[in-house]
Image (cartoon, rainbow, N blue to C red; front, side, top):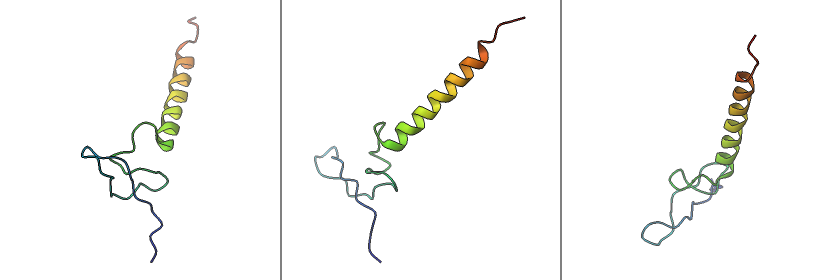
Amino acid sequence: MARTQSKCGARTKHGGCCQRLAMVGASRCNLHRGDWATYTIERERERERERARATVRRKRPKR
């Protein structure tokens, strides 16, 4: 079976490349994924949308 999942490749503290497998759908492993990763950015955008919806709901005028 051929490996289709790429390696992380992030720089480690010691200057070498990380040899762990990257997460599915990402270019980095779970230790090096960081906040810049596409799936993390999408998750943060969804959180912002939820916060905006909650804020709109709270701003209803009182009777």
